[in-house]
Image 1 (cartoon, chains in turn green, orange, red):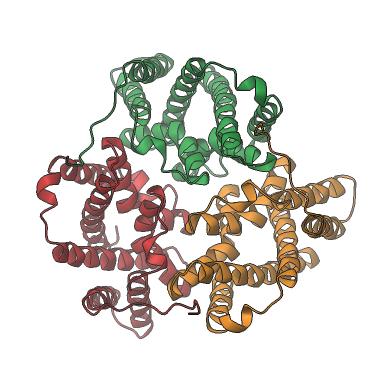
Image 2 (spheres, chains in turn red, orange, yellow):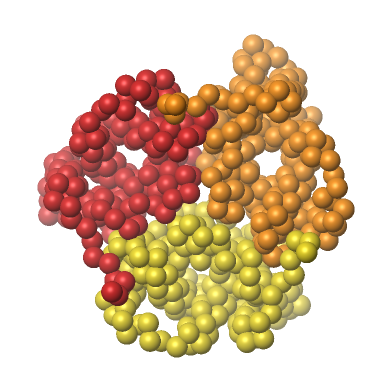
Length: 208
Length: 208
Length: 208
């Protein structure tokens, strides 16, 4: 642990883990999985992106394997949603969307930071931030046999990508790393929330 | 190679490889794959769990890549099932289930052992044992475009998880590692076989 | 960089990357993905096989993560196909098939070479060459929720496998590595093209 930036990364990682585990549990329950399935999908959604990033940048064993607290968090969250499912369903979908956008921003920023720390070139570090943000959701979709939703609709991965890019650029322009991270996160969050509110989508190429 | 425990691990690994490759070949033939597809699915079912574990715990290149005998075993088994398919189909499903439960127990115990050897925390080592046991089958299901069966039905992954946990606990309580491994394996095997016989399932959360 | 063989590997890698990214973009557009989806599938198809190989042989971070030019190439190609899609569709399918066969041969040979360089046993190096050649396409199929096409039809992966095997054998027989690589590539290419022309398929085991 170096200091402030590392402490920020730590808090951010854990908050994002709980948020994403919750969403994974909802998807697993909606997909009629059993208790074990809910645990697996909670874990995969919450930690899959980070594990994928760590394997790709050569930071093995991945943090979520080396430190048991991440897994414990994902399982506790998944278990709580499983038990309190009837109540959890009442959470307004707008609130969930906002929390999810926050989780996405947190993960994208943390992922970019870690890739840079491991000496990955900036352009690829931006991709690794995106992978950290959206990888868990993509693994969840594949486990539930759906085409990953990020591939065909919504400004979601794009928000993570833009946020990560803003963070890298801001550092290049001499901003303090913590400030650059906050800026990248805010951009990602704002872009995601606005895109949902105003129904933005990326263009498709398929001819009419 | 240290000694007795390692030799046990070695035998266990190879027996499990042949058993799981056989099952992979059956699934691939049932899925109308061609000869190459049968080989791939045999390999993935038999060795996918161990490869996934090794990548996750940072033991790269994975054992199944470093030592060509594992792949040769999986391919030989897959090829034999492909050729003798008409006869292999006559094997009673009860016998297959028992052999599969044995393979599951062997892999779970071997996977937990290896994760502990690599300094993975005990709680995560239990998960790695489970991944070793069920990862190959999950990869097989994804290759054949099915939701991994372990996620929604049967006490299968749970048996691997419980067996691995018993093994870790027994070591904590001072049992000799080999004894702890045997105990964990027996618990996993017994739980799996009983759950099939008495149709046990994990609860689901989906409301009526 | 050692010298000639390395320079060959370098050119081959980049040519294959562009070819495969193009095919990935076509598949993604046909699957109605949006711009981000087309980028991801272009990247995954072009570089997924090499990333998988590098993770498996322990060459992390994979080359496509360490060197940003590969990703830039895949994205540029994917973007060009996205924009020029109407024209790109006019490319005769025979030409595409020939280019694809060339990409397959290039990747199989480069993958085998790299695995051997990393001290992987020859038998497994042949598999790693095959993974490099067909892994990207298999990941593309899984992302688009299709059973990987290589598992059930065509002499495709088999061509990569045979080409890799010829290359390893030729080296064993004392051929110069560059010559062995060219020979393996030519065999892979020829086998693939002939199999399409004469509709060769591997046998299946499923009883009538």
